[in-house]
Image 1 (cartoon, rainbow, N blue to C red):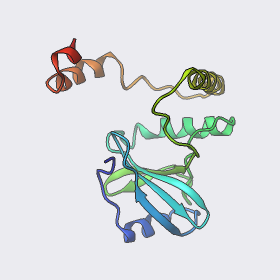
Image 2 (tube, rainbow, N blue to C red; image 1 turned 135 degrees about the horizontal axis):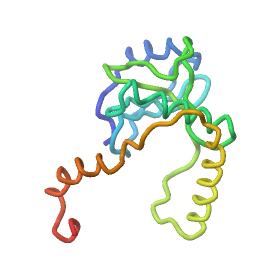
Image 3 (cartoon, one colour; image 1 turned 30 degrees about the horizontal axis):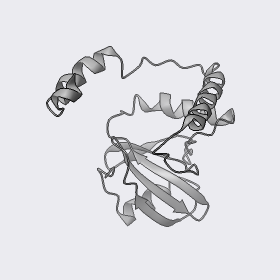
Image 4 (cartoon, rainbow, N blue to C red; image 1 turned 90 degrees about the horizontal axis):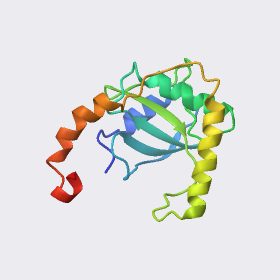
Length: 164
């Protein structure tokens, strides 16, 4: 399950006071995912996703949230971070950075075909074109240095066939 940090009803009520999104009507953990605690949140004003970031720091997070806002403003269908009443795109929940973003319609495609690949390619092109004028730069956090650190930690969990 991709909920590593639980959120109580009272914590959610307090958290929502920082937003103009209405009151919580439904709140449930999202079972898929590997890195963050994610929750579907339905309020009296719409559907959202609450994410508690397990690895990204408060220093790293603005790049990603600002990029998401930029892409959304260029009509790329991405999760759009919801600003808090103070204008910030995230805050701290249970000691971790957390944000609320819009919820996109759809479902995972576990057996993609050629047409799905075409659609992904077209969407990547739109994303790259929309991102051309994004002013902020951040080095790739999953670059060679990350691979060199991560591979030894993963190898002991792989079969010989998987490791080669």
